[in-house]
Structures are given as structure tokens and as C-alpha cells.
Length: 509
Image (cartoon, rainbow, N blue to C red; front, side):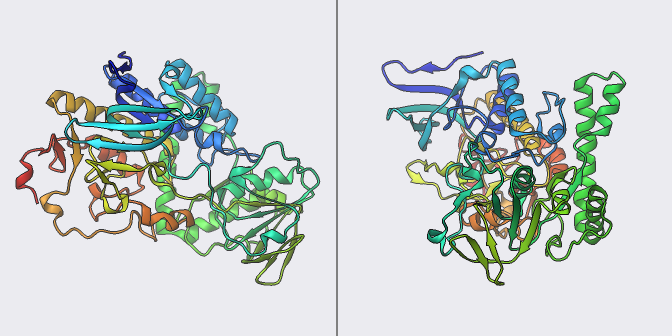
């Protein structure tokens, strides 16, 4: 495999492909690049001091996947543990991928990117980065593969609640939780009811005196045993792990497709099924769903929180957890008061209030000296942008495992790079076609499709979408798995070295 070459007489390091981020996306992308484009040199720039991305950021009690690892794991490395895995188990899995495939020498840890600039005269990206010792480092690359994730890993979303200065206990956002914190015997208030709350609340309940969940509105929970019966049967029959991984992965994706469609076509029936699972895991036929566990939106309009073994509901039944559905009015010296007048006392208050969306990791981008405003670009299939050459962005799925798209885009990028080699092209970008003239444009995703608060707050920073499959990220893995691999790289939406595939740029709309 080619190695990175340092340009003679300068402190600029040149590589063919620069991957940004050593999380689940970056490590998977590096694997595909090595396998499918071994002739290309690459490096991974990572802001943190180790790999893992989101699994390194979050250290709150019980932190775990909310997707099954048969589909969240890479397609090329079988998962052999329980479907829902802890952060430590996921990090171990990623570490094995790095070691088994010789990826470690390509990772530059502690490199914070401060600027990325494209020059059409040289067909190169120049990426500036700084390290903690104050040194600056410059990289040039032919292609930029953005795998940095979608939210701010350093500044989570913390509402500006009144009265926080009066509170004499400990207030912390879940994303900034210090794992050394002892909460044994403490009264804990968790503000929020999404996937983070669903994870941390049952973990707190094991040692805390009591846990209260304060939510503005309820969330849907999907309860299930933390095992996969098909995988267990295949293992008992002596089937090899790669086959088990492939078969179980396919079965889960089929089941998820059926579930997603049912959430749209028969949401009330789905909710009844979800409630039946809660009753089964708690053993309480009369489990009270009103008012704290009856959401106002349809299932999967926001993320469906996975609940292994029904743990949060069992904790409710055991009296370890209680729920309050109301809005926070103010903090007090001992806790909070809601707008409905409920006083909640707490030794520790944990804000599970979500992320701040951060487009492209907050890195300033320029194309030929002009700043890039991502909201003014149009997104091509959720991975490329009009007016931004030689770059692909990895954005995963909300209703299916993120990593499914990492594998899929890994194939796409490698096919694109190899296609450019065959053409002798140095630059590729996407542009609207003649048939896209006057195409209506909208926000990156429709409100009635997927509308968690962090996404709604950040839409003004996201690219625009069109009303055609090519110009949107439809969040439908089951459609994309057929569409993206069949992408015609000579389609008229692609420009190579400034010339539209099939016709000249001057002939385009």
C-alpha cells in the first residue's frame, strides 16, 4: 500500500485521501479504502487522543448502543456478543478492526482541523490543523472524506433554565458526566426522556436512592430481550460466525423495514404492540401508560428508544423511578419546580437534553477563496454538495443503524475514486441537471418525517434538499441499498474536471 509522502522542501504533508474522524464512520471508511483502493495513500485526522468518536465522548452510567450490533457492527467483521452492547464493548470491537487491518499507523490523534480550503487550479484540498502543543500542521489531499459525525462533542445542548445559580446540588449534562462521580444513595433528577435518558435512568436506579424523570413530552420505548434467538440457534447448530452475521443482519434489517412501514401505516396498532411488550416485561397488565408514557407523535417520528429487558419500566414498577410530565419553571436551592407547581428535590440533576448539531464539525470551509455556507448548498443523496468538489460526507440513518450507511458509502466512494482513475479525472462534483430546473427546495428533512429537537434547532445550518431522490437524504436504508450501489457515475449530475458527464458544462441548465 502507498504511504504518505512529505513534499520536498516544505512542511506540507500530502496524501491522496484524507479521512476526518476516527469514530465508527472513519474507521469503517478507512477499511473500505484499503480494501478497494489500495493504490491510494490516506491518513485519518482525529481531534481526540484516541479512536471511538461518540463512544469515547459519552461516559455516563450504562452508556450503550441503541441499535443492535448485528447491523451497527460493520458488515465485514462479525459481531459475536449481545445485540445491545456497552460503549466499552463497542470500543473493543473497533480496536480489533484497527489492529486486524493495520489502520493505526494512518491515524493522527490530537489534530484539530481549523480550516479546509479547495483550490480548483491545483485540484487539491488544503487542510490546516493544530495540536495541543500549539504546533500547526498542513495537509493537502486529492479527496476529503468527512466522517466527523453530526454533533458538537464538546458543547452539548443545555437549555437556559432560570434559577440555576440558586441550586446547591450538582448540575451536569449527561454528555459531560464524570464517571468518577459517586451517586450511591443520592436522589437524582434526569431532565429528558430520549435515548440517553432511557439508558442512564435504569443504570442510576441500581444504586441511587430514587430517580425522577422530568419530561416535557413522553417518548416511545421498544422493549426486548437482549439476545437474538436466530443467532443463538445458528451458533448451536455449528454455523460459522461470518454466516451468522450475514444472515442475522439480513433478518434484522427485514424486520426493521416492516416495523418502519407499520409505524407510518398503522401507528396506533404499533403503539398497542409496544404497550404489550411493557406489560410482558413488568408483569403488570394494568401498567399505567397515562400520562407519562403516551407520546403525542407517531412512532419513529422521533427515535424509538430501545429498552433491553424492559429495564426502565421494571424500575418504575419497583418504585425506583418515577416520571413527571411537565415543563421546568425554575431551579430552586434543592431541585426544581415545574410550571404545574411540582417540587422535585435532587442531589444531582442530569440534563439529558440532547446535542447541538454541528455541521462538518464546525470547520470553516472555502472553495476557491469563497466561504462555504452549507445551507446554500443542495445535498446529493445525503453525501455530496453542489459547488463543493472532491468531498463526501458520511451521515448515517436515524431509523436504522448508522454503520449500514458507512459500509454503503464506503463502496460508493471507492467506486467513484476508481472511476475517476479510469477517466483520468482529477476533480468531481455534483450539479443540478436540466430536469432539476425550478425544482422546489426545502429543509434537509421534512418535519413530519423526523423531527427531534436537536435537528429542528440545527436545520438552518444543514444543506437544502430537492423533491427528487437524487437530491435528498431520505433516511430510508431499504430504498438506498438498491439505489446507491446502482448510481450511474456517468449520470448528468456529475461533473468531472468541470465537464458534465455526457455533455459540456455550458450546455447544462
